[in-house]
Image 1 (cartoon, rainbow, N blue to C red):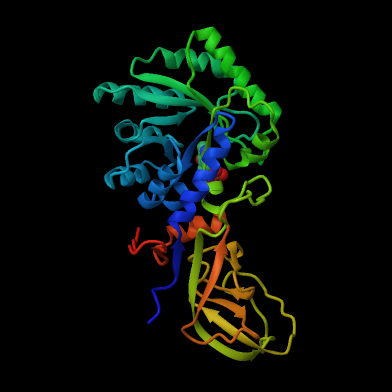
Image 2: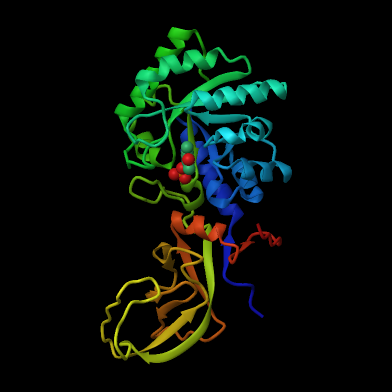
Length: 361
Ligand SMILES: *Cc1c(COP(=O)(O)O)cnc(C)c1O
């Protein structure tokens, strides 16, 4: 009968087209792209679609995801976005480049690179106001000096990350600061920094409005490619697909019921005391999907069904005038948090819609 649900339907051709449009756009001002796969748990088919779309690197925050893509035969330059000291051996083995902010970690990478007879490449991350990862600009020269003394490490570039923790917008000022740091380091140490990675999907507005991108020649994009938007205000990027991912759940109950519960109101399953509006008797629909699968605020019904409430494994929708029956399916688009959760939930099946393969990851 129906396909398995809940499931997330993924269009690889839409992801490929999004990547292509973004690659072409950013290349107009000399910027190459890293395709970021962490939100899709390093899914090899999605990585492949990004590579076909023109990204020069695949970046992920988890070495396990990079291992998975390599085992699946994906061949590209792999970049690790978050570098734990304890995983240094595996990082040297599996990643070509890692982003770094701690000298202790880089020393450990150097140690393992020597053991594996390799040179490990690092991008040094600079703190420019967002207060997530990064070395303070003031400390950067000393950090670079120490890193240059390590024989099995090559500094291939510097980068920064904004709009993640502090919600700080990439703008001409902070991007210029990054460019100036590049000039300063190259001059002081007589080195050539190849990759200047200015940020993520939040850099779109800066890129569009900027006449001169300075030394910035790379961005690391996840959400723009996957969901078709920038991330400063979640505006759609012209020409991109916005629903390459859709979540589908099954109706398990459909009945007319009053909109007011009866009896004394106490705490619900999550410790809140709910309030209700009397809208008379309405058709109510329950779907087999819940908060254990996804933050329900991340869901947007494609058929404009209104959400009445949710618990760990049920979502109640106002089904008035929708003629939904038991066994019918309901479709949702997702925001980034929803995509992350759905791709990580073992209960949500992953299905590619524009080829025949069904892959559970
Ligand atoms: C997640 C991440 C990105 C990608 O961010 P998007 O907003 O999905 O484009 C880029 N850089 C770093 C360091 C990250 O952790």
